Length: 484
Image (tube, rainbow, N blue to C red):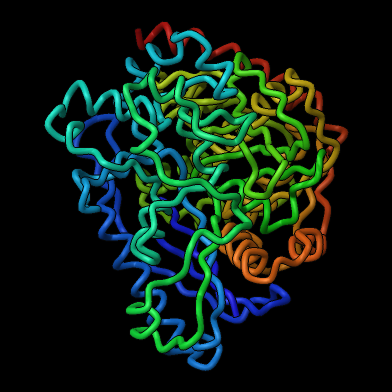
């Protein structure tokens, strides 16, 4: 048996699977995010440990025999977080998360340093790890002086599980310290951020073993055999493993808290100027390119708080087929934006509000705004030479038929819907654990899900949504100027 752990921004998901990858059980535990100042987003790493203890206890209680037969654990986690520990492995301050924008000035300085983009393959975004450490150096020097290791969130969980300081290539590619083409730490990039190689964890591929669960934990859990812990990876790379997206040209769109449009690549071919991320995949000799919007379903969650209605209730009011774009435009830049703007200061907006505008109109505008932002991502991917002809659609937003039709028509791409099941990062992590323990061929482990249905673009509406997207895109420089 194998366990996949997906350390998300709002909670930890555990998935128990057998050697064939069939799901036996799942368990979830929630935790909170702190926002002590505007643009700040932090989390207490001890919450991750408590969540892991909780999900393990639940799996043991509900499936004791299967849990006792666990031979491997795989890890997935939200990327870019800065978890700082001292020489004794003690956490020095709350983890600075991926959606924290306090280091925008430091990111711009690093991004302009010689060959930083060339080695890392990416713009230095404010959410990346390296500028966070520069911010700590400048604003919390007493903490910076004590930093013995910088760990990404899932790798702090690994430290608790194994006692080992280990990272993987896919997650580390989002730090701006990794030579993404060579799949190794770059001393030149570390020097640019005033960091040292000894402050970095050892690296393994996501499908390799990174160590073994500590004896005390195995005794507490009632597991007698050795349990390997796979390298794992960043959440999007591991989610790609969960849907079998690792061959050149495979792709998916994720309507989760953030929005992602991802394409697997068998070569390293970055184009930082497009603001497309080019990262190592969680499997060897493979990379991926990805456009990212910082708020997708999070925009619907935000609207639900304002209107006092649940996201499901809001989405449920739009249960019919699409009939054309709204006259109200929404820009989903609630926390700034990555692809294609690389703008941490821009903020969201509604344009075209009317005295007759209803909650349903606002919901439609939000769904369209997120879809238009993902169209920007598709255009950016195309600018790098990456072309997608058909993609999988995953994430919580994919439960809305109206949203899927809007997105398919806006992208002018067919969207494949997997059969009901859990095909996210937790399954991908379990698959990486299977690979690390058994050494089986990745193609036999990381199969694609059966497609339940394909949502095709509405040919009669493609031009209208394209025209609305053009109006949406033209708003950005005006909104940016208004906020300056």
